[in-house]
Image (cartoon, rainbow, N blue to C red; front, side, top):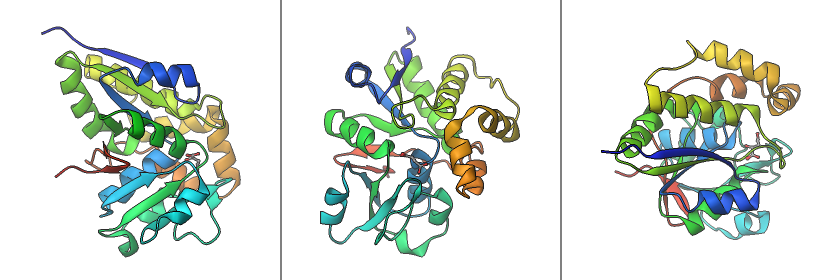
Length: 230
Ligand code: MLT
């Protein structure tokens, strides 16, 4: 059987997002931090995570747990921020629908969900699970788009690194690094977003987000949100 195709797109460039959405599967990538937050929330018992474009939309969703950040910090009046560590063993999210508003990820992810049936989230913390899923589809001939969320319209080093590692791994079954510490060092040296988060006191989020394969879950798009299919 012929192999598929993998291509990396900048989701914050409209023309690239449009092109990416013509592929068979799209993998949304926002390593720091929202993609990692969604994986963590679902791995810790949340029922569904709905990314939204605006604060107004968030506030209109009654009965949901409101989550998200503005300038990296928790939004006033919301239950939770965008630190993945807030979601680990958090009883508040068990069996609940979460609504998430963030600077970059939430609007790109909600556009993907509105326009595509096969949307998944890839992060370092679910690397093996995503690589297995993607690998199988790639070997069956699927065209797979990796969509980077970036940071305020610019490329994020950590998203590009993740996409390149995942592509390399799917195609060769080897990783060009040995451990998470190497990833952490690379990202801390080259990512403006990581430096900004570290300066704001979110250093622990960076270490967590760059650790390989903590969870086995792969979030899949279902209507307006992400779930872990049973
Ligand atoms: C985003 O979606 O813009 C990011 O996750 C920002 C952040 O680090 O909180």
